[in-house]
Length: 441
Image 1 (spheres, helix red, strand yellow):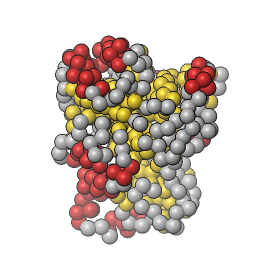
Image 2: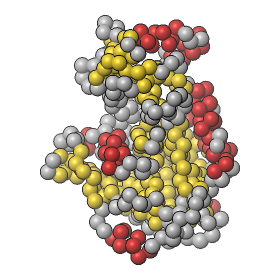
Image 3: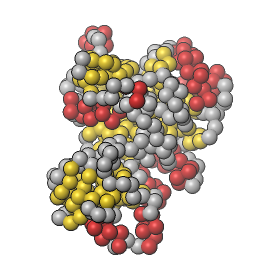
Image 4: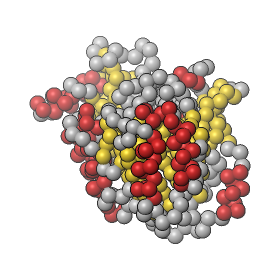
């Protein structure tokens, strides 16, 4: 049976914070943890190595991952603008827990990612990934992973709180890293279900892209894209038109085989430009001819409504533990109230042990493909397995763990890997338009 524990501290001294969270998180764990996840505010960044070492000594495990955060989440609370350290522990009998760290390395054809664990197609795996936005190309990495290991769910977030490269810290075992990414692959009898709430609702009707190239859409349903947008806006109420002024989003349908599209069927990206002369719009991602798009609006009410809708079935999953990755553009500044996401997730999961942080980009699957999101609440919900799983072959698992991790195939990256991803104070928008695309709205 799976067991979880979690606790959060607001102490500004890391040792005092650990003194508070370790006993509380281990109280109901029924044994030593198989995995520890720790998120801590920038006040504790300088003590990251000490946090990792102390956790290993106190918990008796080196399966530790974590990162710095603009704000941490735990116990149904969102600690914004104050010191915080959240600890989440999992006891996972029979599960092969494989922590790893990733780094961008030079290869003959450019740059690649080294350190990825060996996961076979028969492995029943889920990956939790934490990455530094200054040095790790999460969007391109996920694109490649989707092609090479389709169906493998990846959930997590980009470290936050730092303003410059080198300020973030990532924990992997007893090491504190300044670059790259860390994570853990979980293989075996644990059912990790994901919820990805992009905080938007669709408006108007869906249209197929009938003319366009790259991230520029010239026609939707045979008419200029701007004209389609005007038609949608003119049909909105006055209140909805006011929301539109805050920014239009574009939803890209993931599964074109569906007869109807609703929330959860779209990958939401920003509308980043428009050209009145040509009638074209630019989207914050690549689009394809024939792909279905629908305009969306993002506001606090829509985000809360969508989160509640997606959390509706969660209680029926009988959740045992939760990791929550909420955009640092959400929280009190967006919803106008404290603890918005944390309280709703706690209620939906029956107060299951939870920890998380405000991320500078959230990772999670939509339509069985993994993406880097913005303004999203992404979560991993840990449940008992839905069907019996064969006992883990410890000898085989040990042999696999001892094998050197294979590097992911080379990526076409800039010559300086430290500049792969530029930070965005709110949330990164993957697929920004190339020079020469329409000017921003």
